[in-house]
Image (cartoon, rainbow, N blue to C red; front, side, top):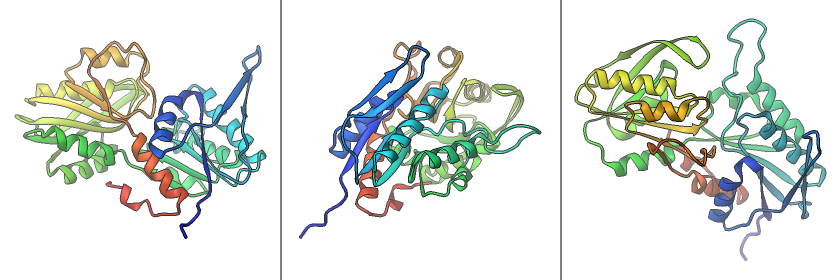
Length: 315
């Protein structure tokens, strides 16, 4: 007799509906029906239009700003809890607000910890996310956290590109561990950029540690926001004799003038995942999207069938 597993239902927050549909399709399921009512002042109310009583529910939504995205996920978690769902998994491809993971000066919040508590209070019994800005954010949760790595997707993509004279680079000191992990998988050299900031999103000084002359460089980062660091690093490496510079970044936040900055830079290509949707009319053709839907679908199926997911981690 075959083992029976809990029925799983998938629901999407508005900002992640395209990715959620891909995940559900890869899983072999359909997205559940959610209707959102909006009041004239902007308040909104999501409503599950089908029963979730006693079931496993996967709620898929990235929490990148604006705060409406986080609020929608919180409301859906609360609705699922009050509808008597048995297991409520918050699938958060991009865990927003994660850069505030510590007190870096007096009288500031630790937003990443606050968000963790809000998600648990709202009803999440498990969290599945990818490439947290700082891995120790997992410790802010009392519930199980499955922290996936985009290297599972990016490494095969890089290997298929068959880049000669490859050097992996980190755009800052904080990403050195990630760069060394990629370099080990790709059997390549590593260089590190040292940078200083005047304020958030503004690099005042950058220096290169290592030699890139005659090398094809791939910068590796967890996210790209204004693209200031990546483009400055790319320009610096080309000045130091690199043959080409590409970049890999899991989460394409791409705010401010990021698209224009990438287009004008010496970056040959920026490879990202679809944890955050790109602008429909993006003013650059340098961006390549590699979908993370299959990885999430495989992990969700393993979770629902109580199978190990340790084989999904490369880093």
